[in-house]
Amino acid sequence: MMKHTLIALTLLSVLSGCGEAPTQGQDGQKVSSVTSVSVSDKLDEIYQTYFDENLKLNPLTATYMGREEYNDKLPNFLSPEHRQRQLELEQTYLAKIESIDINSLTESQKISYQIFRQDRMDAIASSAFPSHLIPINQFYNIANQYAMLGSGTSAQPFNNATDYANWAARMQQIPVIFDQAIENMQQGIEQDVVQPKVLIEKAIEQIRAQHVSDVKQSIFWRPVDDLPKSLSTQEKQSIASQYTRILTDDVLPAYQRLADYLEQDYLPHTRTESFGIGQLPNGKAWYQHQIKVNTSVDISADKVHQLGKQEVARIHREMRKIMQEINFEGDLNAFFDFMTHDEQFIYPSRQAMLEDYRSLRAIVDERVPKLFDIFPEADYEVRPVERFREQSASSGSYQSAPQDNARPAVFYLNTYDLASRPTWAKTALFLHEAAPGHHFQISIQQELEGLPLFRKYGRETAYTEGWGLYAESLGDELGLYQDPYQRFGALAAELWRSIRLVTDTGIHDKGWTRTEVLDYMYKNAPVAEARAVSEAERFMALPGQALAYKVGQLKIAELRRMAEQKLGAKFDIKGFHRVVLEDGALPLFLLEKKVRLWIAQQL
Image (cartoon, rainbow, N blue to C red; front, side, top):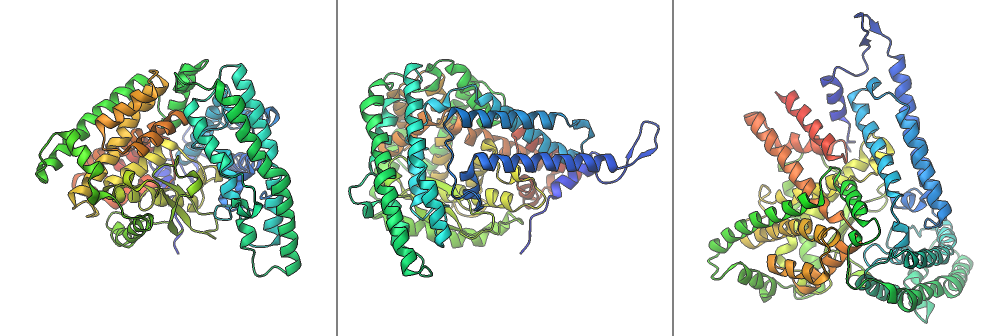
């Protein structure tokens, strides 16, 4: 099968007069390319050694990639010592990359240089803010993460005796991290850096769900119930005995200890009147940093807030056109009520919902070649979100395949509370999480040849989520929005991302209460209570992350319009999508530069 190549990087070199050919000196004589080769080697060494050292500090990253050399490691990443080592790593490699003269690089080399340098600067800047004091929330919850890994259905492999030994060693470290989380949260209480009460109440439920009286009822026992047939009877007995001891003596008591601390000691100190980080010490600067990290652009919270309101008004106008098309009588809020509660839009069962999404795959697979000539090699599957985390999980999420594609990528579909998962949301959500959304962008990125590993597995949030939202808009060209209700679903999904601009900044910059956030959602979008609540609380837990979708999508759509206008009849949609995808995730300013150079080359 075809491997993806860095055509765009070559293009950038050609357009800038750089590349493998010798360059011209000031007197017009040719200069040897030996220097540029040595610079290239030095860059490769910097990128590779940073990546390797970072994996040692963060072995779970290696596991999710499919690399197995650290599958038995679980360092205490919340400890002061670990955080200091991480900071020193970032500082060391920032100094290393800044020792390279950027003017000596080809344009293709400058892309990786700028991304690497900015990533290190962002990591160093992040260390100034006390995120380690609020390590638990209901959305990204380390207790849930470890349970998923230990269930045998996630990235941690359970194929042989070594795999079971690796997880046993890793599992024994869970109590250390939980105890550190407790220590950090206690410091947070003393420094007035605590979570909102509503988030911790949800987290407690999730954590308590993992503490069972019978170890064989634990999610961590599932790999023992599914031991490989290749193991001998003695090996199976040994694993069962070892897991029984670790779970009984260490892991399950640690879950109970964490839940007890949250409920008895932490909860009384949580916030009930304020819900954003803007209300914490140095919170305004903290939130502005989160905006920059998640959007890759310098934009104020106020500007984001106003942009969101403008987009909400525009999308409302488009929705009114659909109301006219189907001859709906009533105002927009009545239409929202109809779309939210009418029984024709509610799935009869979880399985029916899951099968409906799975059935869409064949149609999408058949049609995407109309718009693309670049495809991932990795396969994917649609899988329901696990019951223990579904109440706080998003409507959909994507987990990429490992580097060797030994297991497929996963589009996790939330089938909880069917009344809040209307049928008209299907197409847009599928296009975003699966093809041609996250599955195309992330898998293609990981399969690129010649790309430094830090970029293969890097996530520029505005680009990644912006591409997912842009992919939703392609449903028209793919012939998937002929049904006005599915077209409404696409508008509703875009509307939701626009509402996020308003509510995320409302929570973290303007001090909105939970009630104010929910009231704005109910007034401006067709949304059931369960979805609204989980989304509002997600914004509280992940400051700034929700801004990336719309900011990124607006930039990609703007670049496409620019290309269409400047190229006219020469515009090729497959070529545009290739140039956006073929170098992996980029900060938005670099993506714009890349597209402008492509346009110039076409002309």
